[in-house]
Image (cartoon, rainbow over all chains, first blue to last red; front, side, top):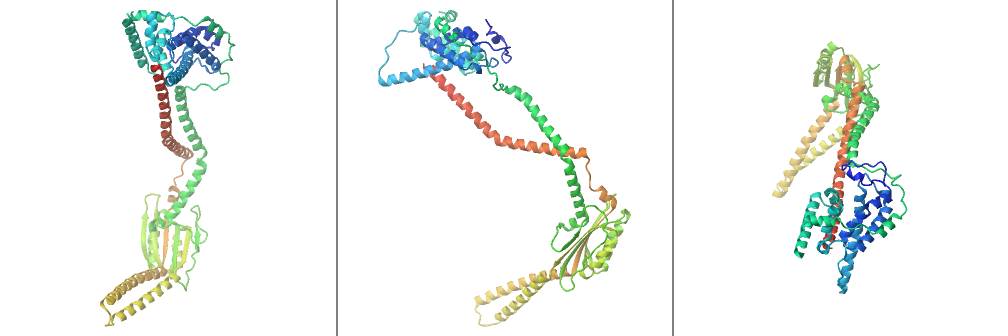
Length: 178
Length: 353
């Protein structure tokens, strides 16, 4: 299998690939990352699965435009996944507004099972999607501050600050539960 | 639960389901990336390479322009210098008049200072009043310049005329003398011929304008004014005039007398112009004619033309910057604003979710 992550070890601005990786190799290497990112962001395994599939469909269609000299495959896929998630959040927001207008509130359902401890899942659910996103990128995917900040569209400092606050809130929620 | 424990647990999140993996990996491999698309623009590299290239291009264009153009420009410049010299030597600079051809003027101005075969001086009209103006450019020996100027003045005075102005300049080879002489029209033909004999005439010009019509019109106007004054003076002697009528007539009389004085002066001036011809003589020594026009070398002309071209390029660049800068700033602000708005909307969406 090709080492599609090798490019990420090079210093920024000096990224070079002798030849572009195959789509299958990239999908195999980063499918879990994209799924985990979307899972933390949306907190719905089914939604994360759908959005992951949609992300890779978009990647397949846009594969000719992918330039490994500009960004790593994982960063590129995360950007596509983020756009797919934003679209989903927008449609969810519209759906909620429609439901609020019709006063037909959806019956409360049990919290989704992400594969984490119930307390952590509950605490994670109390965070905003923005906080969950930075946790997913920096903790779950272990992206560096610059890459994560570029994906979110904020500065690296703001990204680090947001991560610290998100983890602090998460810890507070967990301690409150205890 | 500590932060380390939270981080550890978060990193143990399960991966994608197998069915998703199988579905994605079953897709056919897409075509290879960008086989014919345009290369990506690296702005930093473009700036590093493009800026020196643009400067080199500007200098290259200026150099080519300097090498190609100076042949034509040199000719034009030399011709212009000869004309300027001719005008200066003929005394025009002293009188402040330009050498503009007019109807009825006889002009003989060679482009190079060679002696004319024959000096011509058209005779003035014997029956009509004329404004007679003549310009001569005369080449004299270096050591005879002062003597020629003195003789020219003596000739003018000998014919009953006078010297209006003299400009004698003899530093080294750049000797020049410009004289403006007033000579009675009746003797101007002889005077011009004698002035021409002081050296070699290289350029000559004579202009004759009719003044008789103007002189006659002024004469009629003077007669009319005198009659009008006499009539007003007679009317003022009437003892039955009211104070207001008297005052009005007195004012009219004063106005007519003032006008008569002005017209009389103008009439006298026209008569003087008709009596005295103006002869402008420009003496120069041969060395001055050769030395004065500074003929640039080819290299000098090339450098000058290239410099001028560069200045023009800079002017255009400045103009383009002045025009384009506000537009570029507006576009940049619009793009930054749109991006900030989009980022803000995304942030609000995620914080509210």
